[in-house]
Image (cartoon, rainbow, N blue to C red):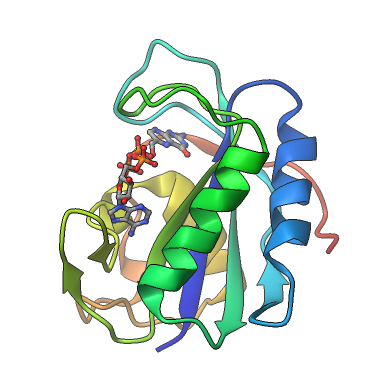
Length: 158
Ligand SMILES: Nc1ncnc2c1ncn2[C@@H]1O[C@H](COP(=O)(O)OP(=O)(O)OP(=O)(O)O)[C@@H](O)[C@H]1O
Ligand SMILES: Nc1nc2c(c(=O)[nH]1)N=C(CO)CN2
């Protein structure tokens, strides 16, 4: 098992927020190994909001899951995420998708991410960077599509 983060933005300069978030993750405790292309995606869950740009990154980290979550939340705050609307618009959202084979069921941190297998905006970029991945449920990444339309946008640059 490996560690993957999902990034999403649908407010303001989406390319800027995604690339700033990836740069901000890099540091002594976190190394970004691979980033997927950016995908333009239909909003999932709440449809009455702008299109998202989504990306998935694989990282290596010495941080425990909760510390990693807190680092991600600090980056969200620094990049101006102010709205706390459930499934609503945001400058940047960083979700922990998979952290090795860890399972966590607290409100603060659910691992693997509870909607992982339902969201095409996560599964498509994840499949791109980990085409042989076996998901925590035991299913192959190639067997699950999830819901929502997704369109790859750019060539990859880290
Ligand atoms: N795997 C996880 N990754 C990120 N946040 C998580 C995770 N599991 C639980 N949380 C908690 O979810 C809370 C709400 O997060 P957030 O506002 O980003 O939700 P959301 O992005 O609207 O919805 P979703 O959780 O469906 O992506 C956070 O305070 C965080 O503690
Ligand atoms: N396409 C798309 N839809 C979403 C997203 C997202 O990142 N992309 N994030 C959500 C809240 O986590 C809710 N809906």
